[in-house]
Image (cartoon, rainbow, N blue to C red; front, side, top):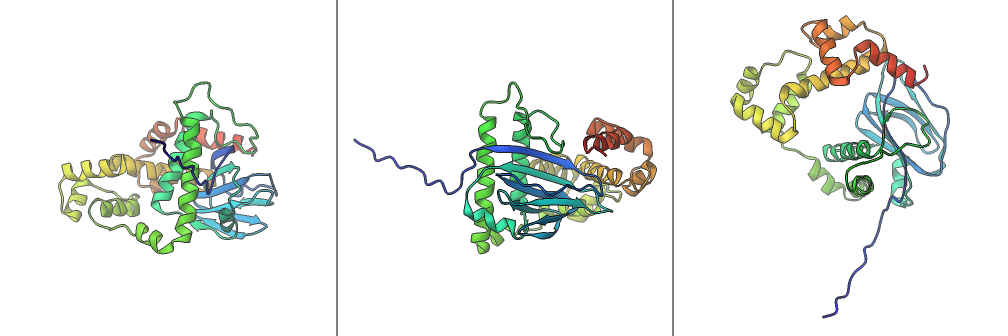
Length: 291
């Protein structure tokens, strides 16, 4: 029997990538007007940045993304009070559907944030650090990376962009997909995310949400891939890194603001999570940004 094989309709492809970065900017950091012959995705993971580009001038806040067109002049400036975390990906793509994201920011759903995280993880399998050095024109690949990891970056990035376009073309479907039932373990996650600076005790969580420790801990880890304590500590360390880069509070004040029992515990946890002491971290960031 002869089969009539069908080719794929490639609505969007990413043939090449220029760079992929995760920046921890200091407050007041800024860039000059730049342009290049590929698209640039800019996503604010934490904080906010001021964008000045041909199609959009304004503030990009938490969970928002913009995609600069090829050869579009653009620059960014960090607020005097906020030290943001920013993902930047430079890539080739000639899909006209992406142009809309150069005119107005898009707020990412939880699903899209997870997809972006997976792109970053795959990129770190392929490319050697540092990932936060500005104006890197030639990111070096590792000598040996997992099978197919380079291709996975392409596939994950294309999937991310296609679903991003779909979410705008089909708002009703996107809205339905974005409505998560705030019950069960999702409610616990939301509560912890909102109250992590306070003292959170497992017994209290069990009482608030009508469960027991075993069910609470196993369900949280199964859904979010980490323990409740580790999730709380990750949120605190993320805030600590921002406050350190803003350079307005002492290490003691940061420790107290984030609800740590002592500055010594804070410093030990910070080094465990980042590989650097708070002072070493600030020095490293300022050195990489040439400040």
